[in-house]
Image (cartoon, rainbow, N blue to C red; front, side, top):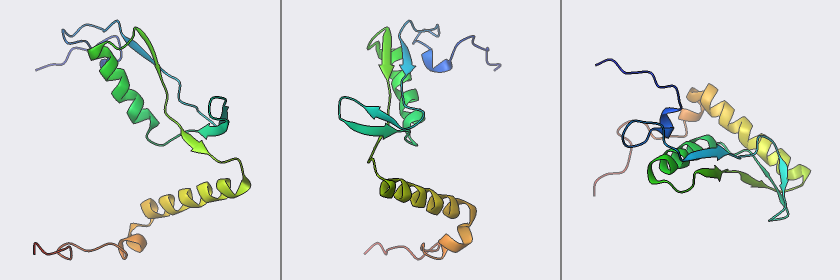
Length: 117
């Protein structure tokens, strides 16, 4: 069956296939910024795009608000040490993805998991 192309984001599809009138604006931070309500800095979070899409779809189907705004972020400490930790975590993640043979040595191999007993 050939799929019809829509002229709108498919996540805004209502139950009847039309575009839902309930839209969601992504207000997730793109860079580190101050959050006045908690007096701390917040910044981008790796799962924010996924969560925004979930909320966008839910709003389209369940109708929370016609002009809904949603954002997801990570609270960050305001110190050079926290920046260094964040950089270190990113380096380890990058290395694990690009060098799986090195990090695979720390993971159990197929059949080496726990027994059923």
